Image 1 (cartoon, rainbow, N blue to C red):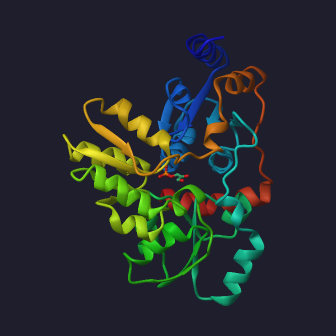
Image 2: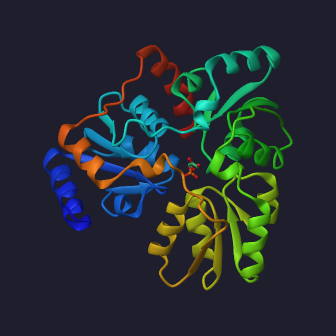
Length: 300
Ligand code: 13P
């Protein structure tokens, strides 16, 4: 089947079965095009809850679907591709959190949403890139254990007076982005504005005109019409911005900023998962109950 036939078939099956399709902005464009909703990790966690649909198919990575499953245990939450994981989330274990809590007994644990559900269950509150600073500021302690991302953690540490004990996890595509290559891209486009994701390493962030999560990038482009933008995040976001703002110019900060896990979703795999309603996410009840408290604190 060609792309548009596959897309029509997906829409047809989703409608027949009453399945709401959610996609993250890093998904391939042909997936974003047929989703009921495309958003950042904060939006997706809310949309799954708010949607009237009892069945949700995630086109994203596993921690995003797991979070939704914990928030909406009465819904059937599925993921299009079961093995779409997140290397950053997999860098931390519950034992790591227990050890940090022993070392810093007075600190509260703020956990980035890119983490396993068992780690969320040991945390006081969850955050995303869109609300991390706000969450750290309103957490009732001047001492914070920030897990698992050192990119986001070091960015927040530079913006708050609180003491942060940061776990050393990282997102390979953001943290390992080469600052020299970014400098070269800037030199080719001297009038462009460089926007980077807070998971990026400090050397890239220092070169940036603005640092924000993926939904913040949409706002930034809206607020700066008529400019060229250098995008330092996953390539799906650049494609989304190009689609939303056809009059603006976008350039990737370096070559190949591609998340292999986000790109595991294909139209064929999505169609098969919808037809068979497979890859249902299940979370152990005790862990889900503890993680829910931390996630609900984020939503306020
Ligand atoms: P956003 O919440 O900014 O979409 O980021 C999600 C993510 O996984 C970044 O790597």
